[in-house]
Length: 247
Length: 255
Image (cartoon, rainbow over all chains, first blue to last red):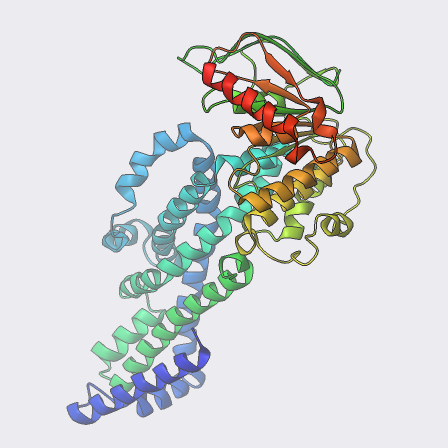
């Protein structure tokens, strides 16, 4: 994707928003100019930065935890047919469950604070990464493994030189695919049992203070959070998995 | 003696044996083609020599030692998919050296007492005409270039035995001939013992100064055809070559 095209697309979206705001002409749809103004005011003078930081921390911690746990488990399952046969029915059942329905249960058990939010994000990303890494490891051609074995590699070297680099694109693809869902579910989770986070900020400004421009600024912040994470993962993918983009 | 097989028995689980009391010997510096139809066990035999499969019973010695895992002085080259897709040509060629650096000279994964490895792969890349492709990924180069990379990756480890499993069968005729000549040249220069599996009669006749013909399992008595003419100038266009091909074809049809 060209940067210039992305820039023009953003302009087009803002333009469409502005036109809609003019047509609707009510306070529930403020113009983008007003929202952006409030966005910066809230970010630097208001409380939004604090809320955004709370949300960002929850997503990052969830991402880090899920990569740290799901990648090794995926690699082990991908290498061992026996273990995979044993666990794959469990994964098969748990993987498609929309994790958002588990939000009330997690909140019930873990109560207030950051932990339940991090756990929810972790659950979404964990299965995605696990499944992709496992399938990637299983899909490695036998010839590749055997060639590297014939160069002297035992189990540890195979892990270091074959399985680990092979799992990297799977991890990044999984993150890229599910980071949007993670932010969406974080929004839901932040509606309950917390007074920090962009989800709370959006809800509080919209439903309690009726400060619609501030609410929109929160929506904008949460969108940018999702976008930023997506672009970051994308950037890492391009840098670390150059071979997939080579022509 | 480089390789000694004594009373080798091999069978896959729940199938009839592929090899039964099979004896075979390979002298240092010989070039063997293992020829036979699919399912005859030629690839199985190569994998046993490579230490990736193990005889059910019987003895296999290479250079006087029992094979319990891939031997560090043996190089294995497969038909396809042997290169790391995420590594460049140079990184792929360096892989074996890095594996050795990873374990050190422990005598298991790398020859014992070998001095620290020389990481400069460029001279060898030049020799194999890969120096313009060092930063390309396997998906960006041709099949012939990929196989030259695989050969370079093996040769950088100074092997004494080269095991090849149909290495050129997916290449076009000209590239195949080019790589066959290159392999012969390298075997002579570096005094390598070669064992190449092939299903192509012509390739067996060109590559092997000895040919081991395998048939429908079980293989019991080795069928060995000597091919002394292969060293002669202009052999590819000679009468001897054509006759050998005919002979091999008849033997394969009979079997």
